[in-house]
Length: 61
Image (cartoon, rainbow, N blue to C red):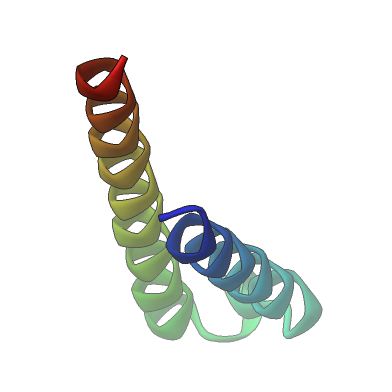
């Protein structure tokens, strides 16, 4: 579970870096919007995984 969370967090960092490095907000707003939506979806997935993981830990205790 922790590995999946780490992978998703790395992907968020990679997409954020790409957005800044390529300066997409100025050059290509449409592409920047797509990347930002992807980042948002990844953040939601991380949040859901963390919540699920915490619930599983509470059940086992």
